[in-house]
Length: 607
Image 1 (cartoon, one colour):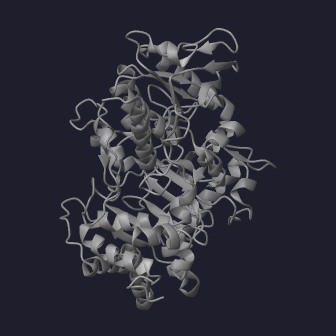
Image 2 (tube, rainbow, N blue to C red):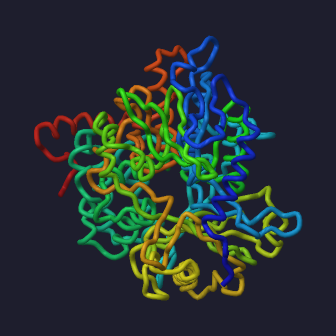
Image 3 (cartoon, rainbow, N blue to C red):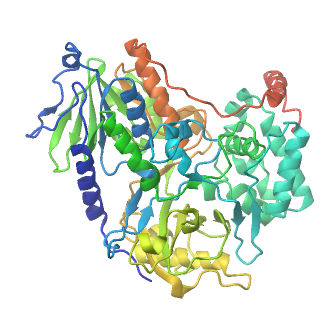
């Protein structure tokens, strides 16, 4: 099995060098920071007040260059702030695509890789709004026009028939939302995709109606403290019910164990997709992906647009500490690509880093100044990491995503080349031999596999690749048809953020926020008690209660609005669109609010 021999250190160094080229082309606005030459020399104005000189724009240091950071930079730059983005590795964060080192031959581009495949459903509204505002040649709606909709999806069962279902779009007409319509829609979906016993399907439909009609107070209290496994009575149901409706929508999709996952989180996501399928409150189809590698279709045009707005980028710069004093952030200690520690100052700071990295930069005095920062220590993350397999034949699997719900490592995947109509994969990428990229997400890293009997963390990189390939074949080649052939495997690429696996101390630079019961109450707001610090990221409290690009985007908008409010700006506020709430269902929720306050269960709850 071919692979990649590139080390994480070499990969990060290459990304930093590329980012430096982007930063070199940046245009600085007002008092935008410039690189200092000596260690511990302040970068930017010596004090926040310095940038208030006549005609100078207020400066903002955005700490992190993922979706949250780029969104904050976008909104701030449009409102006249001088913005510098500090990113430790590569712009785009977990959402970026990347090049497989040493894979290009001739005039082709390197093989495209990624942390995990993109998924931009119609329940998103804030992220699509940003995408529409990123220019792309020949596209009236910017990079949003680079979204395409796979027509179907599949549950791949090991040792059982696959469960394949169409995704009803385009031309879908909004449905009238009555409980009977919702029951029919969900019932049809379960019959088509799940093949459940009738009594189990009926019970799950009842649980769906209970959640749909539950008031916000019941969701935030009762359902936030109830595991999804318990809410759906999965322990008393068939294996099919457990694998599809309990494990399949928790571990395989959001990397959280069904026995621990908050019903509020899982139910809110499910509710949004039901409305999406019914055509209500949707930006588009329930499943959308990009029509090219992510950087080509989205991230690179975004960075170019932000550069044109005057945003400056510092890639390879790692935030070490937020220096707190006199009730404010005085500066940020940052290590530059050469390892020199520098002091960065600005008028305002938007920290757009993943929570597991952000909280390492908060000292005890800063945490004491805002208790919600300390509560972030209770937020949990887990591993959900991608691996790509490059094939010399296009696999005939499904025209969209598929979920290997019986796989020990909870695999989900998509074959990408057919969804990139303007790309000739062998002509455009690699050595001309590989014709497709099978992109796989590994959501379970702590259960033994089928090949070596070891967890993913205990395996070497080569063993992880072999194990995932074996689990894919077990799920797809078990019905008399050979879908994946060993002879067609060209090479593979495992996300470089995973390091030290197979050894005593495996690490992952890109863990995913997960949602055990109680998580909702520990998520911080974008506005902090520190007057010049704002938080942005998918761990921040937003309407979509899930670690998503939509959540990252919405939190950045909230952070910018909080900043505008604090400085008394007359600039227009960012729009922040909440998840769709069906007016027809709100009537039932109001009735449930009365029952909840009286200590009664939901009227549809049969127990």
